[in-house]
Image 1 (cartoon, rainbow, N blue to C red):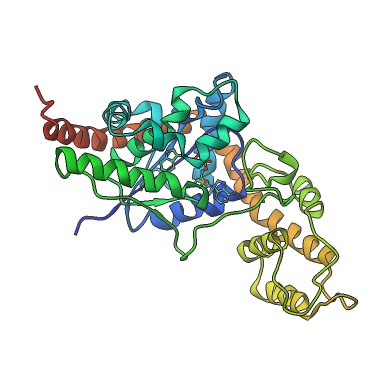
Image 2: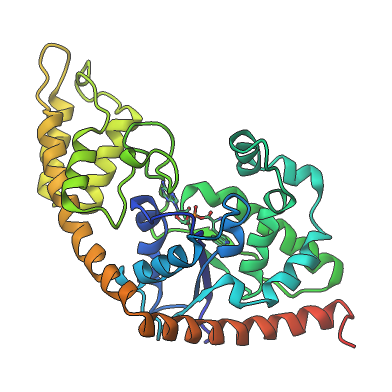
Length: 336
Ligand code: TYM
């Protein structure tokens, strides 16, 4: 039986962080043995918000190196750069004719970007979800491992695929957001303000390139409060986030201890010590990030190895993208 196709991408707009790892890359690594996988660096997408390309090459190389350092094997998957696969741009053009201005303007990420960069509301920003759909559909991918923030983009990709299939003929399977656990992951910023992100508040973001001391400092500064007011209280978002991170990097017995302390606490009898919890989390996190940071730095310094990975990835991705594009053209009666 043919293996199902998996695809996902990461924008090279800054250093990769814990949200990228647990929302996306951890799943990539688990999926590489069981699926036909395409993972790529979305450098065209990054131009919608980061038009200055002076740092771009270094960032692209770092994203490739960090993916390999996290366990992706370039011999098992196609690990490539978006702009090395021009077939995506042609599919993007066709899909643009099936995407409506009204629905694009209503996209949550578009509205957010309009607020953040009112002086640069470019057409690429508006059609961002169309390019993302082209990324996915060019490989006729079904499972798309992403974090929670990408859910709406996936829904739009399904709509565009359905419209294409209805108008021209069945070419695309319908893709959906994938995570091994039932819920998609969302790692919050350490200051409790929104999701952890590459380019906002760096002191509240844990990067895969952070050294042990920065990790400790950032976690010790993470937002907490005076403790729960009653036993078995619901956890506020920022406390839940500390537990979420602990679940990702700490031993089960450690997590259980702090869960029990939290549940036993009430106003006037606070058993849980957030200072101790953060200290433990900082140590476990530093131990988790260190090998990734060191391996990524080695790979990034090895330019010969990097170019080989990039070339090999582009070849695999183009071969498959071309096959889809031939089918698309034929279905649209555009094969002259
Ligand atoms: P990007 O570059 O913002 O993020 C890369 C991946 O990391 C996940 N992620 C998070 N997960 C949990 N918690 C967080 N705080 C967090 N921050 C980021 C994202 O969900 C994503 O999976 N539009 C995409 C890039 C893209 C793409 C695609 C993805 C372009 N084309 C095709 C999938 C398929 C983006 O901006 O991801």
